[in-house]
Length: 246
Image 1 (spheres, rainbow, N blue to C red):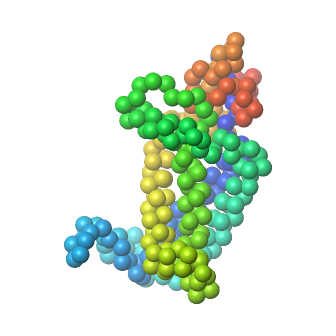
Image 2 (tube, one colour):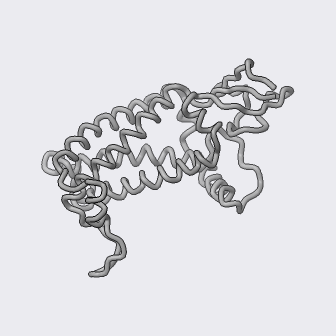
């Protein structure tokens, strides 16, 4: 039979949907700031394989000559980003949600299996969990990346007032490199995350919007036998809705 079960609490969905546009706008305003000193490239010596970013990129998206505007937006959004992240971490601690999100000693091996499964190289069923090892590592890494962005951002924004922090992070130039690399990490995470959502289908996306998903449950054991959710329907984090049955 089919049941409607709760997958994501309202708080998790709220933090998720606040963070996505805020971080996107921070990356956008960060490009306005980066335009004023776009020194990074991939290459060696005088040979450049890839430059971040060509002038045509700035002109096409109207990102040039907006340094002051970019700094204003960036530092206002920084506080929203920080507060949303702090509240999220506190929520996971006090609600016990951290038990599903923190990697365990099995997560790294499981992450390899998940990656091989997604590439079609591993055919066996994956471990039955709410969040698999790859998700646990990715979600925990994003939290650490957020902390890294905050600290490196303060270090390059106020290198005199936060001189101790700037020195701790290897100096102004190295702190800026880390800040830029973390931004690239967010973009890559977005791309993979969205691709995984599309691959998982509408049911999984609806769960992040509405908090519920449809799963196939064995009426005898109340065990989930089909559907994105990988936990027993009797689990405390999955509240069955008896109104939806087949």
